[in-house]
Length: 196
Image (cartoon, rainbow, N blue to C red; front, side, top):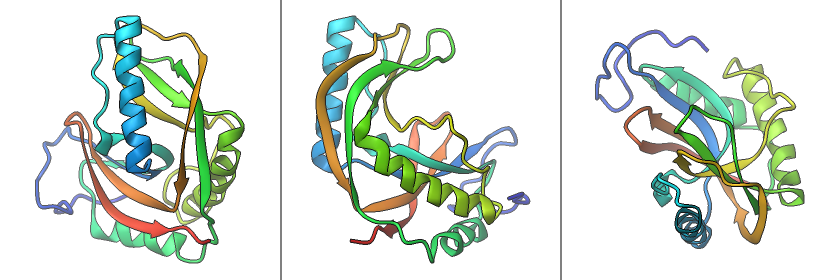
């Protein structure tokens, strides 16, 4: 959706070259977030990683990228609400049981937590959500290359793919997040509960 320039949702005017990211996501439970942060600290210690673990308020699994704009308008949030209003998405368990590194810029490699069988329901529900959003003109249609994951940190070196003790939580809502790109700050704009 092309959003024309206007006042930002929070009144803080970004610079002309700023870009905010608006996306739908799942956030881990407080207990799962604490486990994720502990795991990131262990990986830093074991592998001599230089990056700092992400704080708990930034931990998430991205479901769908809605837009990248210098400003976020209220009508964009309303359009997302309209697109998801009639979806029948159900609560489910998320199980992440592998650590690996994704490709990235040199010196800024994403070290991630991902899953195998424990993310099948997540991927299926994400397809429903992303298809509805794209149908409403909010982002692109889902592709087959989606890998559900939580980014732990960004580092100058990679971590070999390996199994870990599973980290799990019950997803009972998804959220719309505004990411202030380059500022390391996320703000939850809206929440939608998942059915039972």
